[in-house]
Image (tube, rainbow, N blue to C red):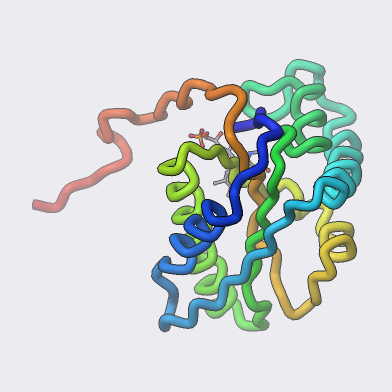
Length: 184
Ligand SMILES: Cc1cc2nc3c(=O)[nH]c(=O)nc-3n(C[C@H](O)[C@H](O)[C@H](O)COP(=O)(O)O)c2cc1C
């Protein structure tokens, strides 16, 4: 979802969503994910202004029609700037580690938590948008939210009641002909 109503999301609902995220499987059961829940309007605004400027710069040489998927460049910049008008933004973090195999395990486990978070939000009638774009603006994200270097940024999602529900994008291989190989 990329357009949200400004209505606040009750903390009880946010906690249910975080609980679902916290139930995800994790490598060696380390449960090393962390979440920052931003409900302060000025902070979401501050994050958006910084992120919007980065997206504007990164897409400078793209044609106006190409932004992200079906979004035009202008719409994509606007979404970055406002987080779609969502009243909540959630940042998912994981422990930073030096070895590639541990790093991968941490990112995959935190991604499982992220997916649980998205599904729980959907079940409660809320909208989300898994975003790694804000990591392009990681320095500002860390400064604004006081995130230490011992944590790796995984993803960000706006959270709110959707103002607009776009149709689900078509699957590339809906009948799972090319993507599945059975060994019977
Ligand atoms: C790892 C990952 C990163 C993504 N990053 C962004 C992003 O930075 N900005 C954005 O608008 N959407 C982002 N998306 C959302 C995808 O664009 C979206 O999932 C895809 O277009 C399919 O749409 P659907 O989720 O409605 O099926 C991301 C999704 C994933 C899984």
